[in-house]
Every structure is written in structure tokens, then in C-alpha cells.
Length: 73
Image (cartoon, rainbow, N blue to C red; front, side, top):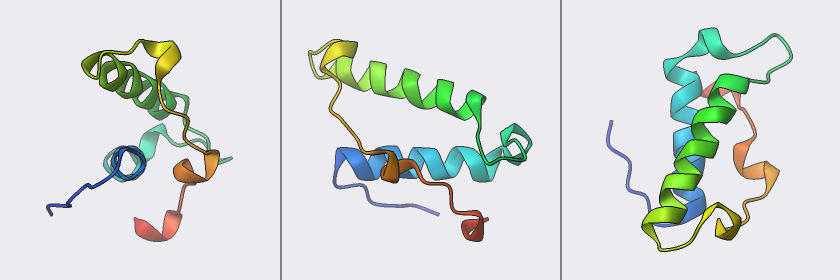
């Protein structure tokens, strides 16, 4: 399914949700996923670099942008 992404936070949220749908085995019983967190951090680094900034200039995104919703699986 194709999703249109219009904002940086929407892109991160979509990436976050898609990783969890595609890799449920990475999700721990408490809902946390260090593997997904690692991929998300790398994506933010790459996006920051492509926009001419460094990792320290990555736009802030609230934790609520990454809330895991099991109902989407």
C-alpha cells in the first residue's frame, strides 16, 4: 500500500509503524524494540545529513510520534 508523506514527522511515524508491522519479532513483551529504535535513529541521521545538517541538527520529534499501536497490525 502506498502512503503519501507530507511532513518529516509523518515520515518518521510511517517508518516507525512499518518496521513494527514488518518485524513483529523485534518487539519485546514490554512493547519496546531496540532494533527498531536503532533503524529509526539511523534514518534520522541520514535525513539530517541529506538536508545539510548533522545528527545534532536533527529536528526534534516528540515521543508521541513513535507510540506503538498494536491495533495497526
